[in-house]
Image 1: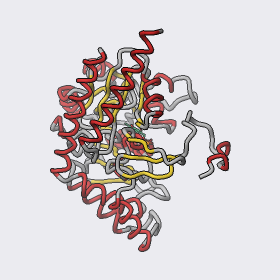
Image 2: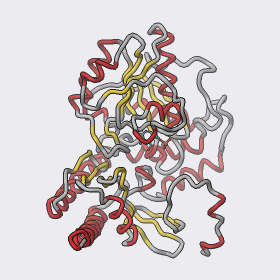
Image 3: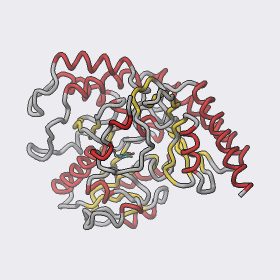
Image 4: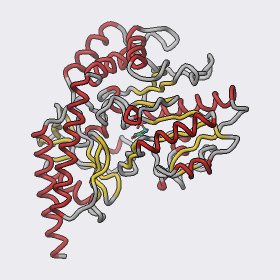
Length: 398
Ligand code: PLP
């Protein structure tokens, strides 16, 4: 492939990208236009839960593409009915609205909570969200996010998202008033650097919101679909939220996300919600293929076991190089580097053929395919060990 023939300027320049073009993926590996192979611990930002281009998704898409692409969102189609039923059977939720991205699912969750407030809470509309939280890039979901870098952008924001602090129940109580309708959080704050809500905090939040008649919304776009070793993270706390959003791993690489609600919270009326591509058969067929595999108890156990192995190996590397804690659960983990060297590590690892992610200057995040093998984890750890040794030596010289 002649990379020079590509019109790079034709794409909006929304982020810094390395000067290669990725052309093929298989399992835990990606190949660029030069034929160089990369071991991928980013996986499309925790998207490809079954690895790159798994045959079951290719087959589900090919089969469905020949049958029916999109009848219209105003007609029923079989794959969306099948996937909605499978999701409600495997969760504490009764009804599903499919979307095309996580942000759109969260936008729907915000609208659903506001509708609930209009119907049942005297017009209450405020949703307590958290400093450090990330819920997407639409205007409302940026406003709901607690990301510092978003603060000066695209003013004026959507109002109605007072902030509390993760794992601090008193801060949530202080943010609640008679305009509050819901509390919304990521069970693990992923983009902020993998900061888990404690099981106790999740239980306390459920009790507090139930007592006050408020909705509890969990954004499981990153933590759901098996990533933590349970199908949904809320299961670790044995609570039942009122609303959940899913995305990322749900389509295993294709754009599919969802808003799920209990019968009591599912209060949209005709005209409140919709979208041209929402619940289209093609994406839902892929979603069913993914869910069938990920929901298997043996699959979830392997995620939990491999997560413990990766955690132990990261702790070993951390001790060896004098770094900080390892955080997270299952195959969503972070290594605290205690110094701002994450960017240099990601750049060097890329050169060495390993894809890593740095959500913050002092933090590495690991989100491999849920099908990653022990050998692949060991290979990533060996590479990281070598990169850390090189960077450590360079720092000592400097
Ligand atoms: N919520 C969480 C917790 C996320 O991690 C993300 C994406 O990183 C989103 C929402 C937004 O999803 P999308 O990028 O599909 O709009």
